Length: 173
Image (cartoon, rainbow, N blue to C red):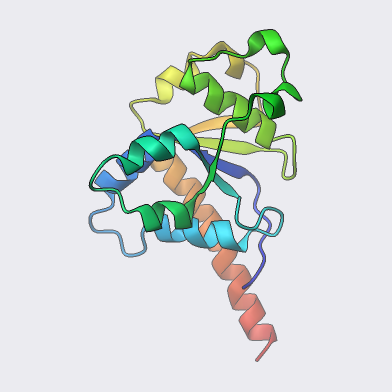
């Protein structure tokens, strides 16, 4: 498989996955399939380029319409580890119950490794909840993308992958 360098990591919440499932009825190549290729082709983070936190995975798998194989193929499930986030944020900023803050903190932690950027994908309905979070004020390494904005990022990464794959195939004929 062709290895591709992407401009940012991806952290998805359950709201984005629900939105994606609802909006993909007539999609030629689904967002899930694109995410699967992005995850497996990442040069810097093969197998863990696309992240979903364990509490979101658990919630999605409890729903009967969620295909576990698609979910696990598109995302690596990560456990929110308080100690890992402490490396980049002071102890007093760590909430225990706010799942939106946990996602933001984890995205900040992910952005401390190459490519030093992380997108949090969510639904359009939840974007404002993230936007109002004080931990995102002035932050450029972690950005919120909702709905079609997130799909544009996925499509951009997909084009990067397919272009590199086509070049590789052409060079190795």
